[in-house]
Image (tube, rainbow, N blue to C red; front, top):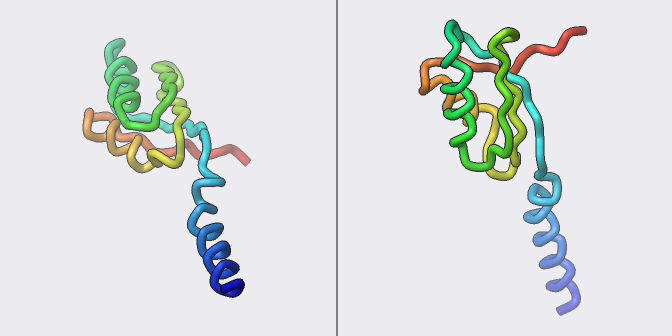
Length: 97
């Protein structure tokens, strides 16, 4: 019985581990095709509609979108896909060295 409880505790901790590491993340995306004043609004609206996204800030001048989201509920790929579906291909911006 004691061995069973130990095994159960180990399995439970392994299954719960990803949830323990989930949290809020912020990613900056480079966004293509933003050519007019309404483009940032469309990008912001499409990204903000993804479940788990908490905040979106779009810069028309820099052609970027900075998104804060719950990584247990969504991913950068899902956010980029939402922007792409609206006509604005987005990909995580490369960090300078």
